[in-house]
Image (tube, rainbow, N blue to C red; front, side, top):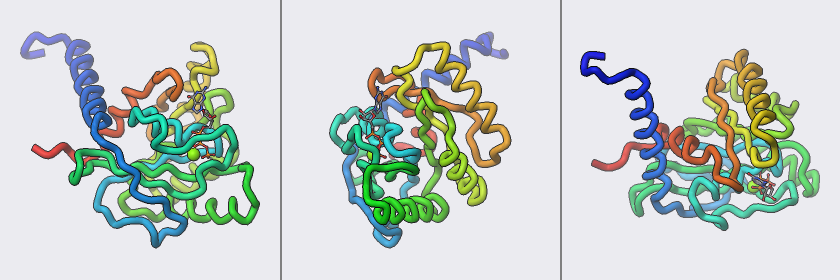
Length: 228
Ligand SMILES: Nc1nc2c(ncn2[C@@H]2O[C@H](COP(=O)(O)OP(=O)(O)OP(=O)(O)O)[C@@H](O)[C@H]2O)c(=O)[nH]1
Ligand SMILES: [Mg+2]
């Protein structure tokens, strides 16, 4: 390079700057705005939004908590079907939030009455297809199980609506390093034919914090830039 800096050194410096931007963003306050049961209840905030989607019990609410460093911001449970509304959280300095987080009800099996599950599935699908500020959908997939047919249905919906999405493997602490790497490689390969999918698959654990700095960094690139 012209200034004598080796490319790998420049790459490492750029990555460190991304990680730092993510740390700074998620060190800001995060406040629960509201839970909505129909699209009309969604605020027109003008903020970029990122949604946490995936099968029931995959760890969506836990990931919101791990990212924001708050254990009880989003309610979690061992029972699939815990989150039954679209819960919105504003992240950023008081009065000047930079990013909206949307913790969604899960897809697929849930321990709740069928009529209720059908209603929130319709809500989530309508939200995923038609929410203008939605910049990225994080499609959470249990690292032990990989992509399931309900995930492929959601991927088809997002491809069709041209909504950018990124697969995040969760609960990586429940698998060995080799098995996680194999699941990651298989998922990357499966995403190649999906036009709206981000090519990078992130690996996380809400329990150990693995992958959380990297996911924060990815979301900092979507957030509104900090005020000068
Ligand atoms: N070991 C481990 N357990 C996790 C992790 N993330 C979530 N869990 C557990 O998985 C269960 C479900 O977590 P939630 O965060 O409630 O999952 P969810 O996707 O929001 O579930 P619904 O709202 O029901 O769709 C809880 O018992 C969590 O403690 C993780 O990274 N590692
Ligand atoms: Mg939840």
